[in-house]
Length: 114
Image 1 (tube, helix red, strand yellow):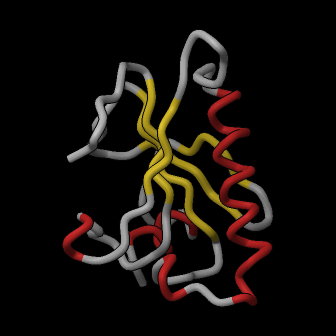
Image 2: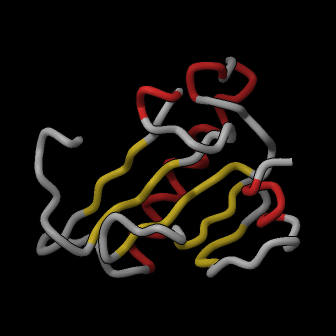
């Protein structure tokens, strides 16, 4: 089991900000911005590049959840903003092989990243 599966199963503590039938969102333990939330599917999809057509609804649900979490946390307005990041593989900085979206906000985010 990955750390995310253990968090979803409540075997490992987390600051949970959202949960529904398909998705789970919690604050990152090593935040890279004042707001740094991880949004994960409850069903394991290892990486976005390994997702299939069968995962289409779940992938859409992850993005809708990201918007909902951003609104809930007050970072989705014309005066603020947020960034969504999905890493795939070692070179991208992926550390947990369980698809997840990083929602980053709370400060100006430079471009290009990393």
